Image (cartoon, rainbow, N blue to C red; front, side, top):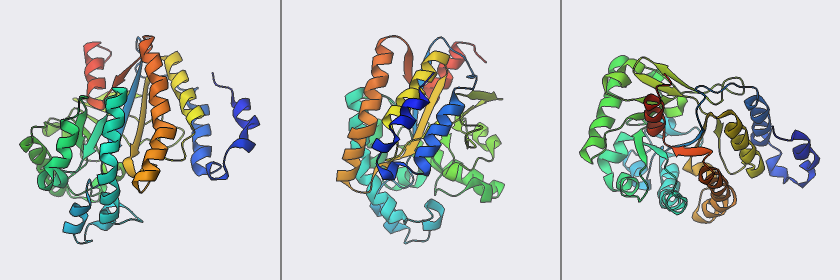
Length: 301
């Protein structure tokens, strides 16, 4: 049980930019988090990170000539997002190698097809990451016809397989879940659900036929409060559930300086704190795919 009074008592010490919708969401999610019953309840907690790679590199945005911008972001062009992600990817790979933490990177099929070397950086990491799919062009699945949705999945799976990756995890663009039957037909094993706010984001993994649905626990960004995230982890340890943090790499900055500063200020100490719990035998670090494999081995579903 975390001490909310301690947070509120120190609220004057929190920078004004943290007194935002993001900060309020973190507090209220944490309050709600404590009332949830984890599904499944395991011998020890799981720590899962999933990352949406919306573009991957600047040149992909240039290739698409702005015609795909609206499918990627409401405010930034593909070129802008790609430029940031091109800078950010090696920084995040370095972070996970230094802390020996695996993550699920969901990449676009178009990136794998035209700039496979970017995906290769993840594949060649000293840490065994889970490389999943984020659609081919980052189009919202709820706006697609069945043939269009299947083409997005088919082209992405084919592009990844050409560089030696058989994707098993799927993260829907804009978290717009749809056409689960198509994922099952293409041998995907799990997907991240859309969550649904305080009432639904929690410690939860559900099985639907051959697919596993992994609920998100919390979006991390540059306004994330480290103290609150540690309390999220403490609650998870007590309840022995799955904790699933997710983010886009550009959530932590736009240039190398801001990315490095925010990674070092938030993510590095969070992972180091979680590592102490792993060393104490209280949690395991999992990817989306390894989490469902572990659950199946434990015959929890």
